[in-house]
Image (cartoon, rainbow, N blue to C red; front, side, top):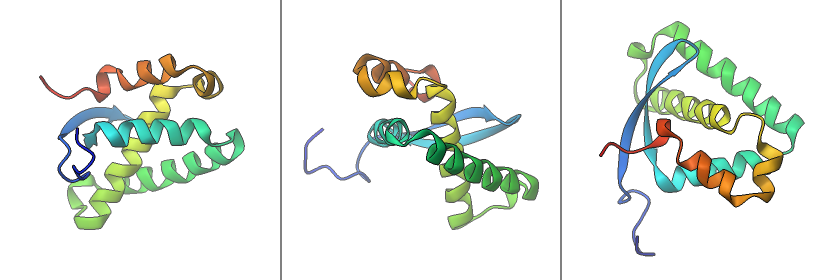
Length: 118
């Protein structure tokens, strides 16, 4: 990828994942996946847990409303929250280990749920 290529021009794809018992379609980009993993592993435990509690509440509220009723920014926020929860699920409880071992980060990026269709 060239340095002049913008994030909007980067290849993106949709992944369908199951979160909290519901199938959710999440738009993905490689750069965003890597950045979110790095962001989540860099946040201290108590702060990360607070962020995740808030994210789960927002995600669950949207599920109750019905995803089919979401439009525009509300749909984008729902998909972003789903993405955050997916990354947290992939990282599991390996935050500390991933901070010091780049191969674990690469392993998380290679998770089948994050892969582009071939």
